[in-house]
Image (cartoon, rainbow, N blue to C red; front, side, top):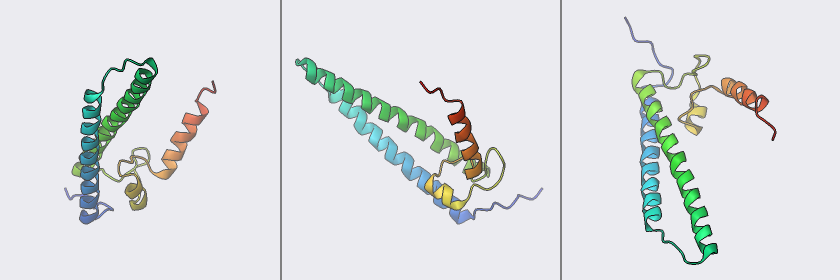
Length: 128
């Protein structure tokens, strides 16, 4: 059985794989500095300073968690490059497009599907 020709060239797929791997390496480096900063933090005697430090630590932990989630999505995108499904919309099966992938290399939906997805999120969002 012949392999189906991908709409992205081999060079473009290599470009995206390199872009994803570089992004992942950057996130890992940043996470390392966050962990070091959290490990170096001290308990302050002053209540206000201690509260400020805790708020900063909470922010750093949210940043670290966001990076962890991005790394997971990057790994999934690399797997899609390897299995030949990268660049195709998971909803409609159509090409996502080079420009969208260049802006968001972990994208799994074409613009139309993303808009539908976001509209559904907004429609079902609680206005509290």
